Every structure is written in structure tokens, then in C-alpha cells.
Image 1: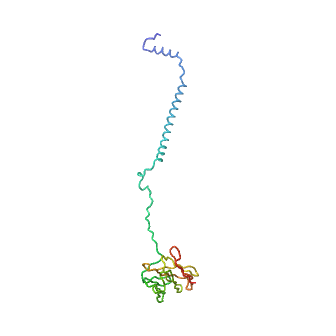
Image 2: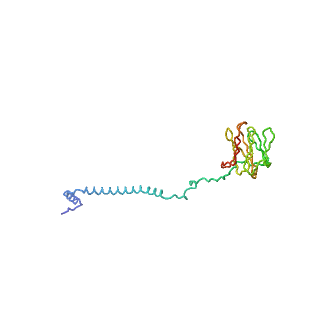
Image 3: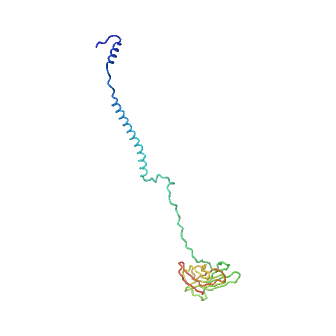
Amino acid sequence: MTFPSGDGSGLRTVLAEAALDITPSPPPLEAIARRARARRHRRAAALAASGAALLVAPFVLATAQRAAPPDRAAVPPAAVSSPPSVSPTPSRSVSPVRVVEPDERVTAPGGAELWLTERGKHWALPGEPAQFRSVVDGNIDRRDPGISVQQEGAFLSGLFYGADGVALVTVTTATGPVTASLLTLPGRPGWGVWYAGAATGDTVVDEVTMADASGRTLFSLPLR
């Protein structure tokens, strides 16, 4: 092929005419499309894997936190609850028999007064002179269980003696049982005084019974 000389415009003309004679082959569109789809699939898979990793990480962390035992050293002292301390209260048994000093006056319901000396029981109704029941004149034997009764209207009283552990004196009347109050001197003298109030001055006493703290009868005095 002979190229014209000059400033090169002839060469350009020859090349342009040659290009017109060339029929270009069709572009590989199908291959390009396949490569594009493959790239999209790879990108989608990578994004999915990354998202799954992000979701799994909090789950694994939460599971690890639930499984791990709590660190009590890290818990503030205020958050650790402890049962309140309870100071034990010492138990104290109260005797049903009141211990009084010699000549100590005790006022019964209704106004009667009672006091004890080493010689026996003293009592006085309101407005009346004092009376006395001896425990040393030989009329009672304090070695054996026994009980006595004095009834003055609605005021009932008497002695109990000769038994250890007396805790209850019950007066049985037609209107029901009456629980008496009990007095004794210090030092376990072996006797004491009981007193109670009846429903009326006409109350009839059927029986007087003394018992221990378990309710076991120590002595019973029937009066009818």
C-alpha cells in the first residue's frame, strides 16, 4: 500500500476508507451480563454473611451473660439484700401465784382487803373489822393437800396448802365456774390464799378445786 506524502491528511483519509470496509463483530453481551450477575451474587452473599455475623454477635454476648455466674464483688452493697437481724427475746414464765411481802395489802374486787403474815391469812370487808385464819394453830395440816372456804356475800376466799405446784383454784357455783386469784409469801411457805368474787351474794358454792399448771387436780373440796 502506497501512502501519500504531505502533512498526514492523506494518511487519515486512507485509514478512514479502510475502516469503512471493516465489519465489526457483535459485542459479547451475554458474557458481560453473566459476569455482572455473578458480581451481584457475590456482593449479596457477602452482605448477607456480614449481616448474619452482626446478628449472631449480640445473641452470643447475651447468652454468655446469662450463663456466667454473677460477680457478687461487682454488685453494690445496697443491691445485696440480707434478712433483717432479729434479736432473740428471752422467754419468761409468769407464775399464776402472786408473791407478796408480809402485811402487804391487796385489794380484791368489791373493796375487800387481804394480807398475809407468817401466822396466816388476814382479811377485812369494807367498813368491817379485820378477820384472821391461822395456819399454825394446828387446825390444818400443811403436810397434806387441803383447801378451806370462807364465803361472805359475794366475796369468796380461803387457804390452799400441802401441795407443790399449785397454779389454779377453781370455784364451782350454780352459775358456772369462777377462777380465783392466788397469793403466797416468799420462800415457799407451803400455803397460800385464794380469793374470788361471786355473781351475787346469794351464790351457792358447790366445790372448790386446786390444780397444777397442767390442769391436774391436786385436791378437791365438795361442799354439796
